[in-house]
Length: 363
Image (cartoon, rainbow, N blue to C red; front, side):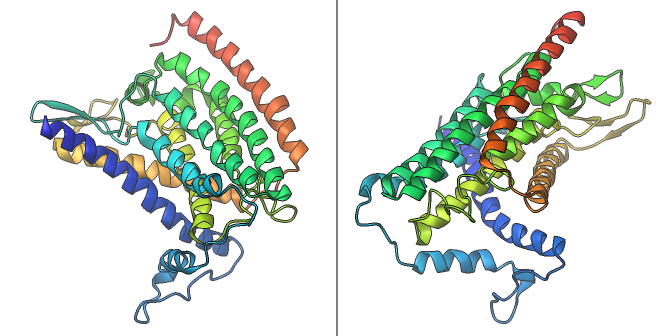
């Protein structure tokens, strides 16, 4: 009994440490990536004993700066909701990652241990429920600040989230129809199969249109450029205009957490999850008959590493888009969600249903 509890706590601790530490590192990644794209050096002044390490100490300096700043609160603000809002945003950003599998089901001392914090038969619904609840933090911040600009930013955030989440949900229906499950571990396992004996059955292969629609709607759900209408730095500053210090930093962290969750979902649903092409529990088995045996522990490490690499690549792509495209106007973003992404997602559902029916159902 105690072993089971320890294993469960270990899985949860791994996920929490992964998303929290990666979100902290992403602040540095974003700065350096934008600097490279703009032919600049980027942040590199923070140092420890003269060691700058390419600016890697800047996230630590940022955290210390925010911790030492005044925790300002407007006189007319709702004290309880104003204080809770950043915690709500961060909390749902962390727990949304809980159902995403970062590795296979491992057998240890006769126990089957799935490498995900929470194993749910409706894991996809859980992730989207947590992502959707994150908008409550935005609305709480905007309403409780007693600031019209903050409230306007919160309303924009809620409208954007609704349009994006509906498009996201519709875009993954094709994946659910193809693999016949809402369990994210099952979906990852079935992406390890081969089409025509040699093509990996990844979601990006079976659902190319769904992948494009999901990625576009996912970028919108993160509320970052080119979909940063809730903040609108050149217009209204955003729902966190009255926040300072660490509370403001928590909102920035929540945005980065949502980026990690979208990258993890894209990996789990469309990029094979932790699957490596032709890699089985015994080692590599190639379509042309060749084989390479590997220790079981090494196979598991390779699969977990593959998941981390895929998530990192997706984060890089999301950051690349963030520094490449100009921001949409509010009406353009709404039109894209309701008149572009959603109708195309419905079309993708119809086409997928026809193909699945002709092929004899999900397998």
